[in-house]
Length: 224
Picture 1 (cartoon, rainbow, N blue to C red):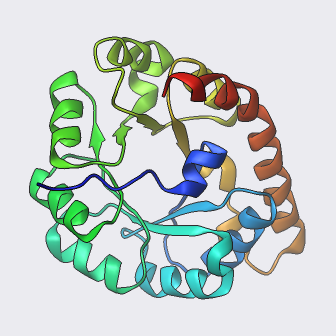
Picture 2 (cartoon, helix red, strand yellow):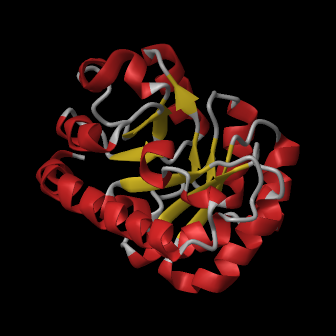
């Protein structure tokens, strides 16, 4: 029997996953440092970014135990093997491939596959997901998440896809265990890695986001 890996501690503690997606990975280590300084310590590097695996390994080396660094857009077993070999501590996908989810669970690596319907959410959970990524979250908003949670309260959901900074707390209040935020948080900081002002602003946004979600996160932990 496959054992379900636990939720990534940094995600459980903060309720936020930062999604690092860019045309290339050159600026991502600096972005990761700025986010971690601001307290956002669960960092997803998407495999659609050129040089993603090298960046993931570098970020892990630089941040050490202060952050959890994972790989996103993990679609196949080959993606899984490459990501884990590069040091990914968790995996994320936009869809549900039960065989890939089970393979990750067998390795003890938390996987957050993407799902939209109750059938997909339940299938991801049965396969051994640590939590299920509701994607794209903005299509149905917090109301859709709340409706999914009603019949499936035991399955933790992470809202990802079009989540703006000022909406994050709404998703947590609707029952999300966490949110994933990309471009609204980064705002192009990855494209100006040598600009201290852009990185300082990113650190400030990270701190503000955590302050925004903290009350809803604390309120929701009791029933999750």
